[in-house]
Image 1 (cartoon, protein in one colour):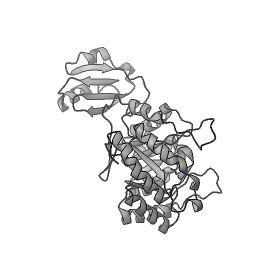
Image 2 (cartoon, protein in one colour):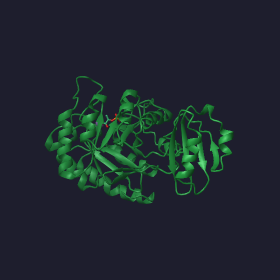
Image 3 (tube, helix red, strand yellow):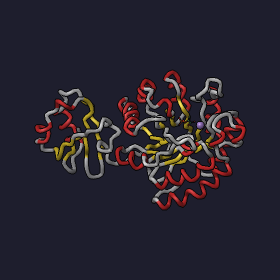
Image 4 (tube, helix red, strand yellow):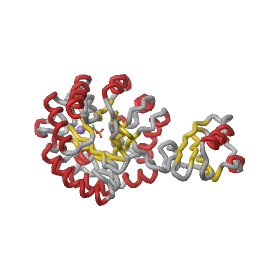
Length: 337
Ligand code: PEP
Ligand code: MN
């Protein structure tokens, strides 16, 4: 349920409404926009006497929110959320570009890729240290040493780090070393992990599960937000369909759909969506045209020798060429790159 207050309402009116509801076991989600103030009621609202609430002189209107996601719902928070990470914003006018290898492999590799993508205009460095591999015999990532190497690359370039967490037991080292914590597609419904990252204030990059509906994805975001962390960035990374030509099928329609349903920023991963380096460019362009707030791209200095996801990785030179072209697409959408 959402309570829309009369225009020009302030903290006093918010307090008045909240105190009139304090005998219910509810959480309150306040959204102060330029024109309207909204109080979102989270919890079991079935018992709330909405008719009585509507007679409160500071209340303009009551609306029932039928969707199961509340804090992630645009009705609760009509203005788009902009997440600030050390002064770099995701969800604002600028398209956020996150680039780097699938996995951190060596100090030389991560530092050289970091320097190259920074020079081409990337805003963040990505690189996996804990890898969710399909086979237990594949390279599993450098783990804690990988985080150390990412830290060195950050010291060299100043780029904030985006990397994937796989287990709640690593949360403390991620909080200390990482700027954006990624929840991978395979862990999108790992509810323990979602609850755990909900307790931090670190921004969370939440990838869409391999076979998840948009509603399931937003409910995963709701888990994180229910714990108190509103800094969630959604990432469409392709879903399973009957098509086998590409690794996954990029659900471009998810971008305008999620933008309508939620206030959270949405970015696109054309690398995992296709599994093919030659398809990264057209789908990055499509993502921007469809309204994405950013893109995350795998860049490797030597894709043929990559320990993970080489076929979908582009080279630093290809990334540079892509960035030069994407600026015009961003401009067409009234954005910057
Ligand atoms: C990754 O970003 O390297 C990754 C494993 O992504 P996803 O969870 O989307 O497969
Ligand atoms: Mn990868």
